[in-house]
Structures are given as C-alpha cells and as structure tokens.
Image (cartoon, rainbow, N blue to C red):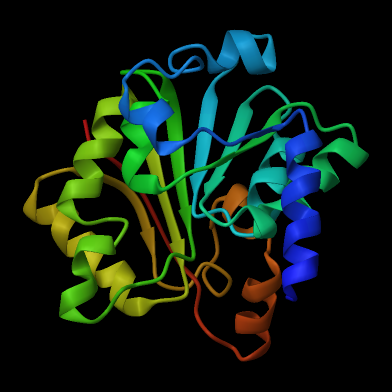
Length: 224
C-alpha cells in the first residue's frame, strides 16, 4: 500500500463515528473516557461486548457483527490503514454494532474496565515463533493476565489460527495453568461439528490458506 493511500485512509478514519484512536497517554493515565462505558456511550445498549484482537482488515469483526446483531463487536489493531476497510464497510452497510480501536494490544487493560468484556477473539495472530519474540505472542501468560482483568468471570476466549505451533503452544499453556478448554479442533473445515461462528466467516488470508489446503485450528477456552 502506497504512503498516499495510507494517509488518505488515516484521514478518513478520523471522520468515522465507529473508529476510536486514543493516544498512549490518554490510556495509561487510567482515565480514558470510554473505559467502562463502551456499551452505553458507543453502542447505546447493554448487549454483550466482544473484542477481536489484531483485527487486520476487520473482516471478522464485521462478519461477527452481521451474524450476531444482539452483540457489540470491537476490532483492535495498531494499523489503522488496515481496519479502515472494516470500518468503512460497517458504515456503508449500516452495521451499528461494530467499532474499531487503534491501539496496541498490550494497552488493552487501560481501554476496558474490569468485567466489561464478554468474549475475546484472537484471529490468525503472528505466532512469534522465535524465542526473542515470545513476549509478543498474544496467548502468552502476560497477555492472558491482561485479558483476565477485563473479562467477565465466565468470559470466553477464542483462538483461530493457521499455525499448528500457536495452537499447540496455547493448548499446552492452558492445560499447564489448569484453565478450562471448552473445545479444541486441529482442522475445523475437515471435522464435523465445528462451531458455526468459526467456519461461516472467512478472511481474505484464510481463503488463501484453504486454497493451499492448510489446516485451520480453533480453541475455545476460559481463563477465569
């Protein structure tokens, strides 16, 4: 993507009612204006709040919002030029239960209050295989602790990935911590009985993986 295109998208994001771009200082001050108020201030309802972390182009956030109109969905990514597509689609199609936040995922506990979130989706994250990169792996212990702070006591976690490494690493960690694994599948498109919300929405890259016959894995679990 050219720099002119990126600048155009950044400027357009600023005009979207469904895009929020708090500064790092706004968040870490502990007084972010929407913390604890997302349902009331943004969505104007009391429906369950669901996050998608590392939402990319926002395809999953928008897809889930279309499929589940009685839930509120927020896609989170640091790359605003990417989720511009999802935000624009939501506006064009009148999808009022989808929003996007531009921030780093490690700041998530500053953007949301304790027990504010009902579910968290992590879709196709970078597995960060190299040892030096493990601190950025979105299902490591440090990130799980962050999620635990904002999830409701029975809140659900979802991990959908094309990385067998990420799937195995996460399962091993969850079992080691004695967290509740509700469902785990090494190939959601080949085995019968896969949850509908996992197979009915396919991102651009996911379609590419499937064309190459690459297995897509999924885990649903609780961390509280």
